[in-house]
Length: 172
Image (cartoon, rainbow, N blue to C red; front, side, top):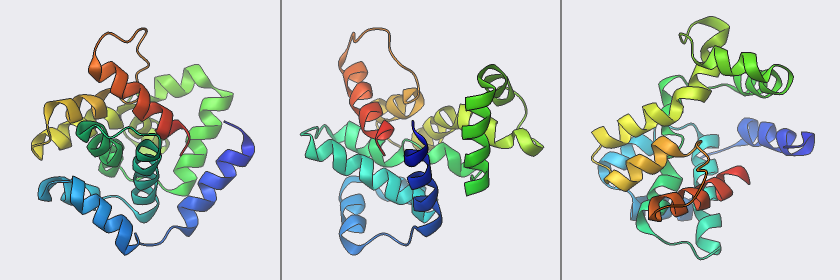
């Protein structure tokens, strides 16, 4: 990811406002009430990120119901330890300059300055737990849990859906 992309991300985090009525209606049409409660834990920037992922998938013709729900909830684990714009910058710089250390920091306790790295590393697992507790379908839970894993090969429908989710997430 280039510097211009990261600067756009930073600006989107700082400038994000509430969802439009149309975006809110899209979310409500796809999520159960319990899943909507999870979605509304996001800050405005993360809500918009999820809606952009959803819209990109739809525009590309990907309309599998589990994929669309996962698009909206894939980052919900980040709500366990919300990340500020400074936290996100620390993650990007740390991963760029010290990739092996950043990975190790992500395996530690979520204390002090390491907390953003732990949230980055473990949010898929935490999000899957939250989605399962909210009654999300098993395929949705699996997509959330695996959304940062790159499958070596596509062996089933979930792997295929995972590649679509990653494609849209990486561009938003």
